[in-house]
Length: 180
Image 1 (spheres, rainbow, N blue to C red):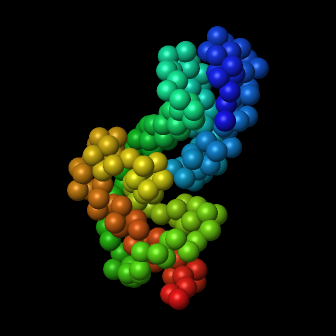
Image 2 (tube, one colour):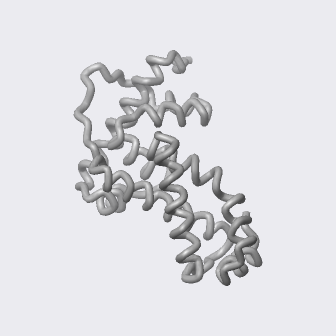
């Protein structure tokens, strides 16, 4: 957690405070970038752009309680990731359902470690990965996702459903599912 004094100093342009904020949040925010942009160099570029924007707009950030800076920073990073994907003209990339996708009980994903799930998310096609991350991990609803990605609510729901089915198929492929 970042102390209020550090935030206040960073707002005034204190380089040491900015460095402290960067060190406190860079790893988590980099992992967030990697969930959307699996290529490390691109994720690093996006994170750098996000931190530039964070420090540029920090003076306008209104603290609304503990943890709100971190939440705001996550939102900035997600938006930067989505802008990167749009610039690449790949987001949202819709994928047609795979006829080999196998249905599993919904608890299949719950049996994975965080690292296993992260590795599987990276294997999702970009459109699936983007919607899955926004809905399941970031907590956006389908209306918000549709606005962010310029897609319909129905498309958002469909992409999430297909992403889950795709993940379940990957889980079976890797032998990580235990039906007991």
